[in-house]
Image (cartoon, rainbow, N blue to C red; front, top):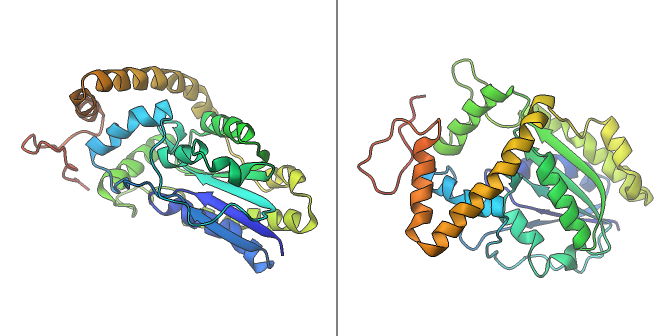
Length: 285
């Protein structure tokens, strides 16, 4: 029996649903699919508070690992394909996923195996994928394909809907705005990628899967976002390093920097200074 391993971290559950849609045709074809969900020792909250959100900034852009709970699935396999699913935090792979890439046991799951990556994202993802591709290669893996499913809303609309979802947990449509995140019909339609993957796994041609995935629309790049990406991606690491350096010399500095970022962000409104923990502000929607 052919076997596929799915390794992922999903904070909101959206990525888990996307991966379920992709691997369902594999299971229907009789391929065994094992799922390894990454779990931080200290879970990240959802919805975020502004303080916890900006506290994640230095570690995200600095790509600093955090402790993960013991992996529930052994790496033995053998696996015919490893699917890595991740989301983007501050233009980088999420901290829990990056922690897996830097985990001492990661190579046991990746080495000498074909790897396919799946991203569920609002828009900007190319730089994060380049980093992940290099990390997979350094672990001895063989990158054979990639799938990105994006929020189809335009950039300004998705900024509003994603902030409402991240900080207040409200994903439903409101006023003239659509539901936040990737549309459910796009998640359901991603099963077409699974049918393509299943065909190549069954025939032993997984190294040639990417051209077929491209024909299925597996990669979509928004040109304006590609132009904007280079600026923030070069600015974020230097800013993150400064924040990290300050926090190591003066521990409260990390909290101060996070509070400053939260206050200066465009969506840091409707907040009362009475609470020292910066809770979620009142939602006007």
